[in-house]
Image (tube, rainbow, N blue to C red; front, side, top):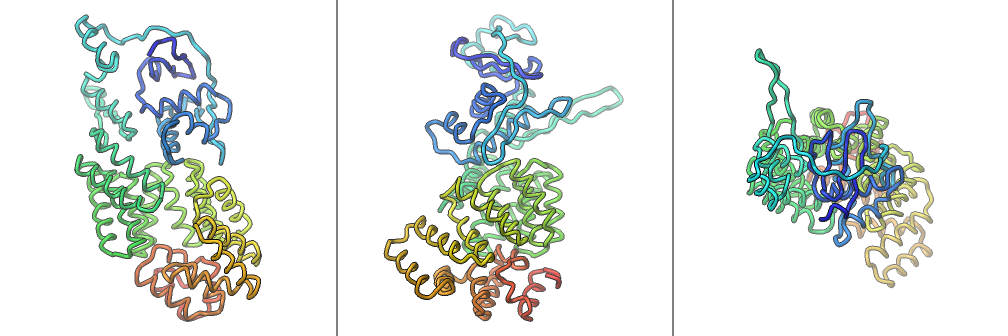
Length: 488
C-alpha cells in the first residue's frame, strides 16, 4: 500500500499509521488483528462523534454478515489494548443502544519513515523487505513473537516482574494458544454460540472440538466445549451432555485455574443443574474478580443473584454486562431480571427496545407477553402473540383462527391455546396453567422440569405467573427439592 493511501494520527501516547497498518505506543509497535485495526481507524477518524454500530459493521465488514457480538468483542480487544492513561482516561466510550465514540483528543500528524530500535545488517533488511518488512524482523525475535502472536490472537497474557537478589527480570506466561487455526476455530465457535440460530450449538461444538484437536492444551476451547454441551443439554435433556460439559470444565480449569470462561460455565452448572447456589456464587465471583470486563461472567452472576431475589445486586451485574457488550441478548437478559423483580414497566421498556432494534430475536415476544399479562393489559398481550405468530411464519388461516378465538371466547381461551401448543417442557405453560387455576397441570410441568433438571426451573422461585401456586404444599416441596430456602 502506498504511504499516500492513508493518514497518521496521534492520540495521547499512541500513533496510528493508517497506510502502514501500524499502531505505535511510544514508537513501539502494538499488534492488532486486521479488523480491530480497521475499527480503530474508523473510530479515530470520527473522533468525538457517535459512530453507530450498524455503520461500523457496514464499513469494516462490507462483504460479510456479522453478528453484533463480533463487533463487541473487537471493541473489547481494543479497550484492553489501549488501556487507560495515567489519569484514568479511557479511549472508547459506549453510547448505550447506539454505538461508540472515540473520546481521546486526536490530531493529524505528518507521515514519517518508520524508525527501528536497533540497526539491521543490509542482508537482514533485504530479507525482511519481501516477507513482511519491519514485522518480519520483529517476529524473528522469539520472545517478541510470542507476545505478538498473543495480541494478534486477542488472547490474554501477563508479564510478571520478579525481583530477585540480582535485580529484576521478566517472566512471560505463554498465551493460551499459538496455533492460529485453533484460535480461528475457537472464535468461530464463540460466534455461533452467541448467534443462537437453529443448528448453531452443534456446529459450535464441532468448532471447539477442532480447536482442541489442534491444540490439546487450549483451555478456552474446553470452556467453549462445556458451553456448547450445556446448551445442547437444555434442548436434549440428556444428562450425558451435562457430564461431558462438566468434564470439559474440569479440564479447562486444570489447564488454567484462572480461566474465566470455564469458571463461568461451572457457575452455570452448579446453579441450574446441581442446585448448589452457594458454590455457584463462589465460582461466579471468582470469574468477575479475575476479569471484571467479562460480560459473560457478569451476566451469569446477575442471573444467579436474580434467582435468589437479590434484585439490586443482580441489576448492578447485568448493567455491567450491558455496558461492556450492549448486545440484544444482554439487554433482553436485563429485561428478564426486571420482570422477575416485578418491575413490569421497566421490563417492558427494555423488551420493546430489543424488539425494535432486533425484530428477529423472537424470544423477546414471550417476555413482552408475560409483562402485559401481569399488568392485565390483555389486548396488548394478544397483539404481541399475533405478531410472534406472524414472525414465526404462521399461515393467515392460523392467525385468523386465533383472532376469532380471542373475539369469541376472550384472553383466557387464547392462553389455553398457547399452553396447549407450547408443549409441557418449559416455564411459560406452567405459569399459564397456574393463572388459569389448573394447578395440577402446572405442577405436572414443574415436576417434569425438576426431574429433567431443566435450566429455566431456576426462575421458579421468582416467576410472577406462579403466584397462585405459592400457598400449595407441593410448591414448598418443589422449592426445597431444587435448593431454595423456604422464604421463596
